[in-house]
Image (cartoon, rainbow, N blue to C red; front, side, top):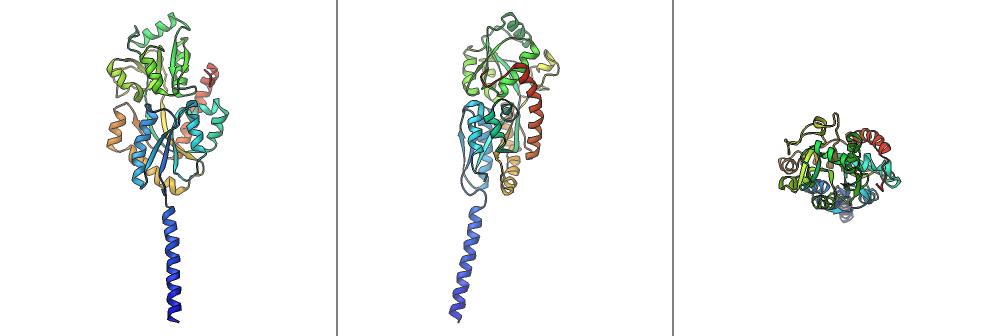
Length: 324
């Protein structure tokens, strides 16, 4: 009898340990995490991705950043939306992807329905930049130059429907200038052509252009935010110089496939907040003019909805499509 009881005890213990082991094995994260960066290397998305990846690795699994560029970010977002909703695949999204592109693309609207926000990551000032060789030295001179040459020049955009695109279209409406869009597959290749004077101007975020402004390869004539950038305090805002009330800010956020378990959110949201508030990340992002941030998922959704209403009007006035 003692042997029978002992065998039952051992069997029960083994079963219990097996169940416990299975639960522990499934605790998030249980496999490496993939962060999708939907633009080519060299832009702001990559900068956020590397910072977030380093923070998330403290949860106990490696984090791989995977660039899936194309279609103004839609390819990467679509890929992330089709992943399992277990927190092991997430997306670094720019504001335009979820406040502009769903208005222009049925495919992105479908992605919008299959993905959910996790946390804000930061805000990026954007600068009106021109090649260092262009014979203008102020935003007033640039506007006069463009008005003297209507329809002759192209401006650089990181892709149709991106913040760089809609910010420029808003600038065109307010400034009354005629320049046409030249679309690229991300900020990296666009900036190369801007430096080479193949396009006349761009409205581009700090991480992609600050080093070239400081080297003299590009000139920054204005910033699109309501107040001056700490990274370039001598550069005036568009609002104070020529276009009163002008304000346009790019923000970035972390997203995941819809239906993320609460356990994932309970671990990822606080870790993102800790990461973006760390002195190291603040210094790294601040050096390129980025203001790190974090938030709840609901705060991202609220900001997204408000900006969608604003850009809907700009799109209608400019007749923007994914082809222009």
